Image (cartoon, rainbow, N blue to C red; front, side):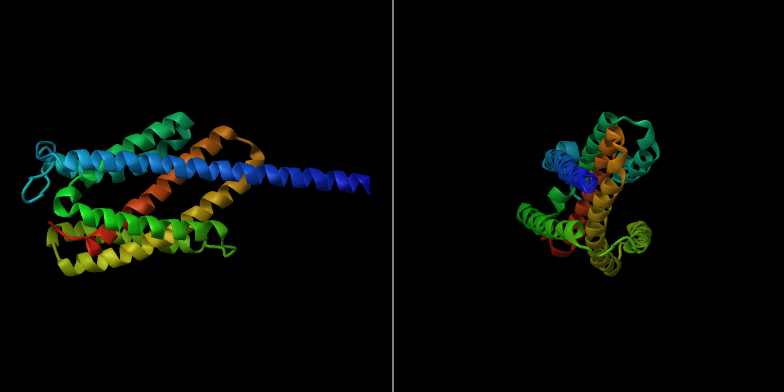
Length: 245
C-alpha cells in the first residue's frame, strides 16, 4: 500500500510539473507572438506613414508594387518555408531571431494598409481580430474535442486561398476578393483553434523527454503559427470591414 501511495504521489507530482511547464510554454508562445506583432505593426506604420519610404516599394498614389515591392510581398511566404526547412538546424535563439526578422519583413509587406485604409478602421478591425483570436485560441486550449481532423482540410483551404489570391492579382476581380476574404476569415479562425490545441498536445507529448532545446524551438514555431493565423484573419477582415481612404 505504501508503495502504491509513493507511485501515486510521484505521478501526481510529475503531472503538476507538466502543467506548470505547459503554462510557461504557452506564455512563451503568446509572448513571442506578441513581440512579433509589435515589430510587424511598428515597421508597417513607420513605412506606411512615410511617402518617401513607401515609394521604395510601391507607387504612393496607385499603391502598385514595383519590383522591390513584389519581392517584399512574397518574401514572407518564402521565409515561412525556409524556416520550416531550417528549424532543426537552428538553435532556439536563432529560431527566435529568424522569427523577429520575418515579422519585420511582414511589416514591410503590410505597410500599404496605412495608405489604403483609414487609421480608425485599422484600429477597429485590429480590436475585432484580437477579441476573436483570444476566444478561438481559448477554445482550442480548453476544449476536450479532438481538432486534429481539421488540420488537413484547413491546410488544403489555405493552399486554395493562395492560388486564388495569386490569380486575382492579375484578374483584379472584386467578387473573387470578397469570396476569398470570407473564406479566409473562416479558415484562419479554424486554424487558430487547431494550432492552439496542437501546441498544447505537442508539449504534453514531448515534455516527458525533457529536451529543453527542442521545446524552446517548438515555442517559436507555435508563436509563428498563431502569428500567421492572427495576421491573415486581420487582413481578410480588413478587406471586408475596413473603410478605404
